[in-house]
Length: 110
Image 1 (cartoon, one colour):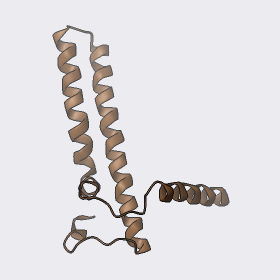
Image 2 (cartoon, one colour):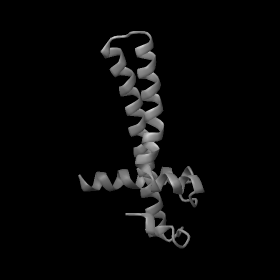
Image 3 (cartoon, helix red, strand yellow):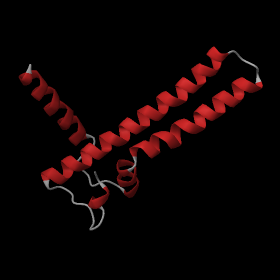
Image 4 (spheres, helix red, strand yellow):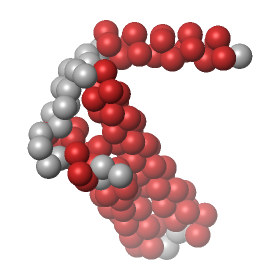
């Protein structure tokens, strides 16, 4: 099992390298990596609000309202997890010595 896991990791990082994953992060990528929960909330909350408001305006059932709220929550989770993935990518770039954050930027990471 560990051999298969290592092969999958190497395959993932080789695809990442081909797609430009070893480039220094942009300012926006650094921001999202520092605030994954905020990114998830900023994406999910407006969608949940709009879906619930639309369901209330049409007098839909609670099930229809829950579907809209679930959609917004799911999108928020996806964006938050993507931000966490970016945080891990940046830590890997630091570990490999390919990038180092500007002074004062690394103190925000926990």
